Image (cartoon, rainbow, N blue to C red; front, side):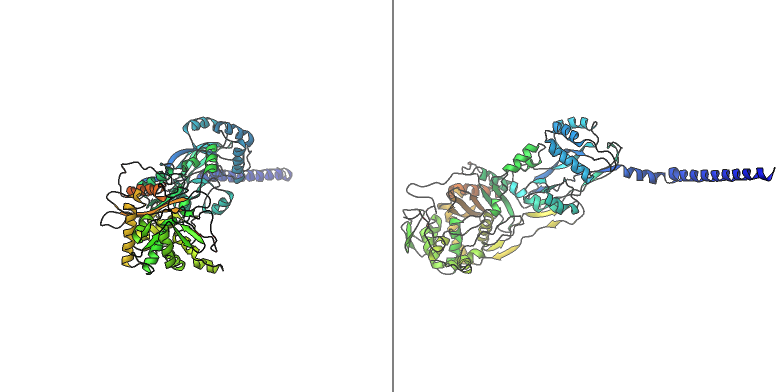
Length: 625
């Protein structure tokens, strides 16, 4: 073979060797990819084609002190939309929204907004929740037609007693943009539900669980093909309250049947400050906010009265404040239980006349009949003897003029009417102001929970407790149990004989005075009625009381306020009675009939004619003789 013919052959052989080496290298690479690293690359491929479908974890349940569930969870169906993976074609969302709107009875524009948000966030979002089974079966057919539409099962909040303790428990709702910005870093998703008011809001971090979910394989059309793995959620902490279901029920129902259907009831254990009931009316059904029908939710939002009168409503205390005036005057020796005055039905003071609620007058009265019959003229005179500054100091000692510190949003401090505030504002304090203050009028404002704290402090002889509602919180994620202990805020110190005279007089109020509507066989009940003038309409009705078994310490103290209810004895007294009976497990054999103000012939309702002066001592027409 010539040299010329050998050169091409050598080049051909070299090329062949190169081809063989390249083939061998490709073969080895294929072996590496398909055999040695097959599992690794398969997992990577699946991850790139998967979606996590989050499932809301069960929210922590709320129980009363006896273990009765007041807020729990139910299994519910949710419709979600899974957007296509990045780079894939997005379907016609407008058409999809219109089709789903027809099945759901929803606004297509609202659904379209949610669909667009899911695509923008690149995450699955809920289109509807708490779906009834009939709707679920209809929608299960649609999910085979429209890519990305799926049904999942989740835990949803449920309140088994409906309107029961609604302001205390609160309700769940969607986050607004501001809440979403604040909570997204804590693991909340844009469609998460949060507590809006009450305990659901105050205990959000304790009640919220850790969501679980499913990692699903998604095909190129966005359809779920199979489950790759699941990670279960962790339920939120279970909260055991100090609330007593029977006491709360009595409070709720009493307010609903009251003269106006508006007001508040707060019941405490005077030995610890534990809340037994906290009710505000009008109330609402928190289940309405979780309805699958947006129209129902919209109506619920529009009609709800979120104002919690128990902690945020401020009212003049009326004659219930006479307990504080008596404590101040008797303890400081400004008058004694035997000091008598004559009540002709009015008091002339300067150029003004201050009327008693009984315009015929109570005639000659001392401490015990004066409190028993709530004689205004007696307290006008004893208030003047005691002085506005001392009355103010004792009111502060019993916790008035400051928040009680209950762990609920929106509590108000009221207004402690007295010389101190006036002088700080550069204004004068007049004797007419002291007369007003002596019967709980003027600019004196209190909340129902403050009056319950006062009633409890009187019942236990002076300890002012911070009201609390948590007995313990039990977590399911391994955190140690949290238990709340009573917290003392202050002490009202009175002489033993003053405590005795105060309690004896308050027992007479119930046994033979203005508070007979709250008398309970087998219990020792003490109380005080009140009717507070209201510049905006009819007078408000008050009743504060406590009850004990003979020989025992009082186990319940209660404050009842019926807005525009008139006379405290007839409008608020029966509610207080029902609450105290429930606290002791007693059956009320006669129906509680709550009436509006009752006026005896020849008399006007207590305090309704009590005359006072405006700031600076100017008379308030037309209540003059």
